[in-house]
Length: 256
Image (cartoon, rainbow, N blue to C red):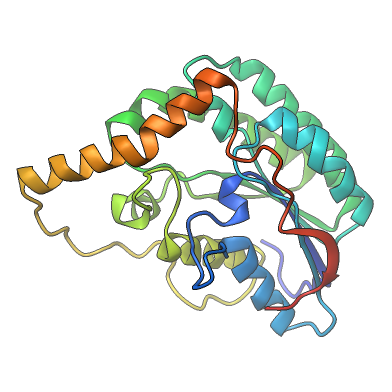
């Protein structure tokens, strides 16, 4: 862990996790862990600049093609790269290709910044999560190798029982809620060598038992509002990020 490092600029690269879904603000936009981290860094460095190029639904190939070039050209002190999970959660996935593309992204970004941060992404614990766990483990082993090879910081969120707790996730069961994002921001903050402000991995209290009817009602609502549309996009080759621009496409002074 590095300490006493000052970062004057930060570029976030990735998909919906880094865009900030589903940490909703009152105006309906999303904040997320990257915005929270940028706010903390800006508070310690006047003139701090921030860009967030992440767009929901992006696959690792799209991240490489659309985001790594602009991010590298910005020459920021700090770059975070999180991607590949949208790929491995699809029914059919060439994990080897995903890992190769992730390696390409790291090789483009690592030489351009003081500190590159990679992550072992969190997953919502449950039966669906278990189906894809072998793929995720393979992806994460490559992330560990790339981190060691390029002297990048790897933040292990996957191992956290707290962040994986369903109560940390939005009703769509794919994206962290506000508290989940807050914990991720704290985890990255500490990984960069800053003094802890909270225990990001603190266990949650025992869950309150939920009755069978309430569980089934929640499952039906989830299937209708989230799972069905997600399957529809997969079948038609569409993405939730089609035509969507990054929320912070330029490296500009941070404004909350």
